[in-house]
Amino acid sequence: MFDWNDMRHFIALAEAGTLSGAARKLQVDHATVARRIAALEHALGETLVDRLARRWRLTDAGIDVARVAEGMQAQAHALERAVRSRKTGARARVTVSAPPAFASVFLAPRFAELASRHPEIELTLLGTQPMISLSRQEADIAVRLTQPTEASYVFRRIGSVTYGLYAAQGYISRPSDEWQFIAYHAALDHVPEQVWLLDFADGRRIGFRSNDLVSQLAAARGGLGIAALPHFFAADDKRVIALPVGAEKLSRDIYLIAHVDMRRQAAVRLVMDFIAEKFVNDFHNGEQYNG
Image: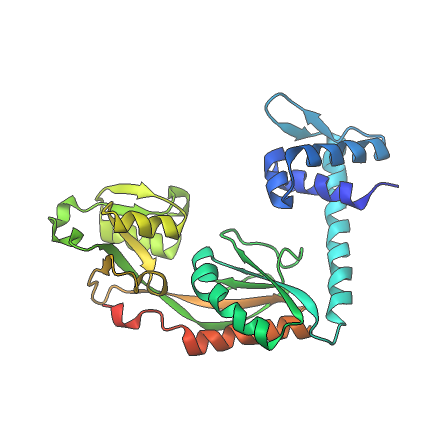
């Protein structure tokens, strides 16, 4: 019999495609992933991975095992969700995933109140850009700016985030044809705020790119250019100002999401209700800066 933890490391490699990607996904070092996969190969009596000089590649046997193992993992997660959802008390661990800026600026300061109300809940907050999987229990609750399409997810719209174009004090006094812009990586040219920014830029130079809003705001403060930023994140910063954009505003809906198996679990429900409550009561979103 093989060790399921060894199989978990192999699945992570199959999904990530690289040893480093699997290590990041599992939050372990490369050596641990390599050791676990070697142990799995020994238990199964098969070579699952060709260890090439620059990368690891699944063998034909590895591809077959990965295909079957994904189904095993899905069933294991379903079993765990079924057990967790039967717990009627609020004593539990709950992991919330949210966009990094929303996690650090809005949620984290308010979770002290949630902990005071429900000290029996052990909270984890993940500020993550990628779409993590609730089916795989990478989180119990997700806050997203896109409506989920997974049939196994339930969600509610809790409001919207509005955006502004921000620059350092005095930057917009420059001739507009000399303006530069601060954007995400080009791979994110499809996201609404990037489309909005590029449309406004109208061919003018993108002088700096970063997928981290903290870095974008810092670059705007330093006079590097104009950035499209959420009002809740940038409106209170006295070192930048919002450009008047008139009717050309951008707003994105915010969704609170859980797996259908977990929606009635007491601790998950309490945390979801708290986030929705705080959003309604506290999320002012810098309306005075909406142009």
